[in-house]
Length: 177
Image (cartoon, rainbow, N blue to C red; front, side, top):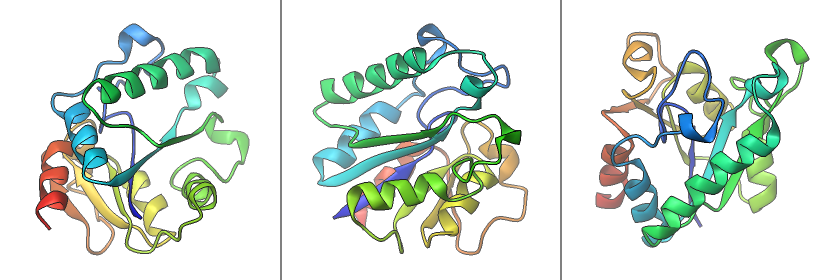
C-alpha cells in the first residue's frame, strides 16, 4: 500500500490564526484538491491527521468539523479520487492527550486503522509539529510553504525534510518517482 499522511489546515485548505470555525471558512488552497485526487487515482491511500483544538476550546462542534470533512471528500470525489481516512485531535492544548501533534497519537491511530507500519511513509505538513509527529513513527517529512510553512522553513527541521511550495508540488514529485 502506498500511503501518504497529510495535515489539513495550511496544506489542504487555508489556515487562520483565528481557527477555521465554519464550512464557509473552509477554503481549499489552489491545486490541493486536484493533487489529492491525482494521488488517489495513482493508487495512493490518502489519510489526514489534523489538530482541531477549536472543538476543545468551544469555537465549533464536531458536526461542523464533519461538514468540513464531508466537503473535502466531496470535492476530491468530484475529481475522481478519495480521502481514505481522516483522524483528528479535538482536544485543547492542556488536555494531556497523546493525539495532539507534535505527539504521534494520530499517526498511530492511522497505522492501526490501516494495519500498516509508517516507516518511510510521506507526511506533509506546514509546521514543525506536523513533521515531528510523523517522524516519531518513522514517516518521511515533507514541508510545504503554504499556511505556516514559509515561517517553519527557517526553523531547525527534522533530518531529511524535503521542502516544496505546496501540496501539488509534493504530489508532482511523488508521482514522478
